[in-house]
Length: 136
Image (cartoon, rainbow, N blue to C red; front, side, top):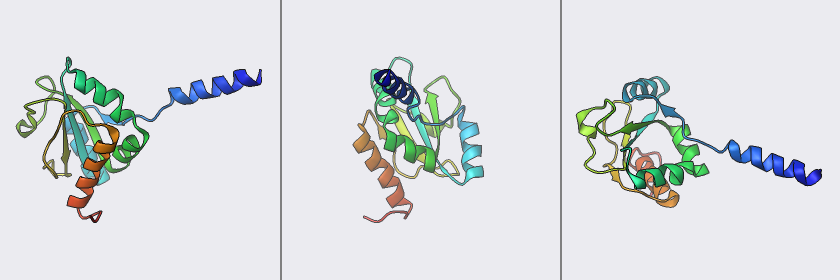
């Protein structure tokens, strides 16, 4: 019985893994970022991109990545050529990640491709350096 309870606990705990809190549209994300005084993280993907799925299923499920994104950003996941978004976010390749300020302007240049959690966290650090929130 004791083993069953432990197994049940870990099964339930794994179902509640951390997830990025996604806005439903760019317009909603921008308004929320302005209201909450946060920056934006925009993830641009396509429906058939295998590297996009890898980024979503691995990097964007990593506890520290999720924690920092949810704490510091309003995140929005957009599908290229399907969702509405500003023209300057027209990604030439996917996945593409944009880090924007509350006005919707880029903080650092677009991050293209799949990155593991450690490298993705370094991009989050780059944004903090650029904003003067962190020193080298």
